[in-house]
Amino acid sequence: EPEVTQTPSHQVTQMGQEVILRCVPISNHLYFYWYRQILGQKVEFLVSFYNNEISEKSEIFDDQFSVERPDGSNFTLKIRSTKLEDSAMYFCASVRATDNSPLHFGNGTRLTVT
Amino acid sequence: AQSVAQPEDQVNVAEGNPLTVKCTYSVSGNPYLFWYVQYPNRGLQFLLKYITGDNLVKGSYGFEAEFNKSQTSFHLKKPSALVSDSALYFCAVRRNQAGTALIFGKGTTLSVSS
Image 1: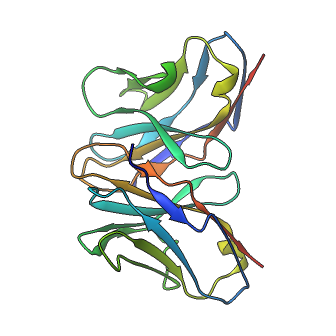
Image 2: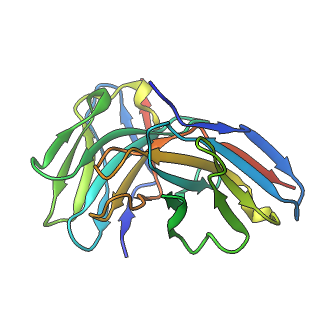
């Protein structure tokens, strides 16, 4: 069964540095999402992306964050200047189309900001 | 705004006993409701969904959920719990609009003892 893949599985960075988290959604999916989960806590919506543009974003997704689909397969989340409170698991998800198929999640990237 | 509440941080049940994990929702219009499960260091896995039709929906691993419109609830149930069901369970809701993001509850840890 096709999967959403995320790299790296763990990223350690220093405060103030830029990080890029990478995702490869399932190939025939059209909607893409980033969520984050602070250790063992609630899964929070960050942003959704469709047709090469942001379709929804939460108040968490401020100017420090950006998303991009640089080619036909990758979907990236960039944090420009990381803060300690950005430490979390970041999950990418994708869904096929306009039906009610469930989101498929990757296994996440654990971001640790020191 | 749409939201989901999971009133219990943790549910403890003995193996073989029935289990219920509670969820209530708030959304304008008709809700699309989902349950996901998360095992340690993994992404979220889809269990079941309610879109329309029968109020009792059946999903993976013997789980089912009952949609109750008057109580705005969507409780997850299983007639006989297994130790392997121990995990973090998330209820989620989205608006009746294609591609819109899922909003998750804070999660309930299910612990099944042998």
